[in-house]
Image (tube, rainbow, N blue to C red; front, side, top):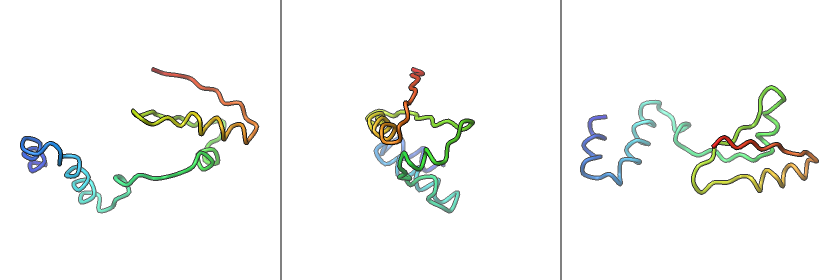
Length: 84
């Protein structure tokens, strides 16, 4: 952790990689730092009326069109609620 603080002072562009390495070393796995690619079909199968699908958006990411296309294929009318 101390190394990351010093790194932040001199090489802020390398902090992200240092954090990834820190988490991988601490947990001894890359499960938390590797992106997981799943389809909307997988999310749909994992959901039920008591477990809704919630998308948290990040800048540059918008799954709306994929979701609408999937809903049309399944014959479902999605309900969108904007929280922000």
